[in-house]
Image 1: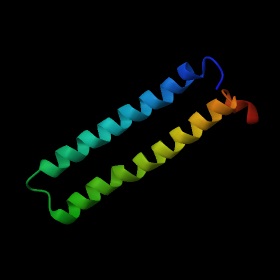
Image 2: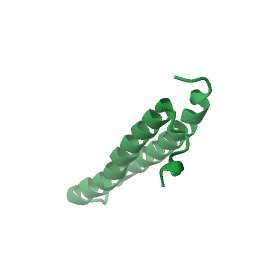
Image 3: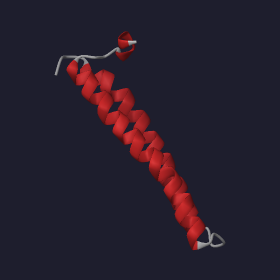
Length: 77
């Protein structure tokens, strides 16, 4: 790993952590609502779970690109 990659990896990690923290907080709020039916609760939990998995996958890809030295991936287009 080249020097300076840590700073470039910080932004994707922080943004991903903030988004996942938000989704987790929303999930906990939904679980505590007494009037939400079980099937609706499952749907409301599953909907943010799918983008969370995608966000984690994209973050892992981005960190791999940074480690390989592809800091500016827009050069490929």
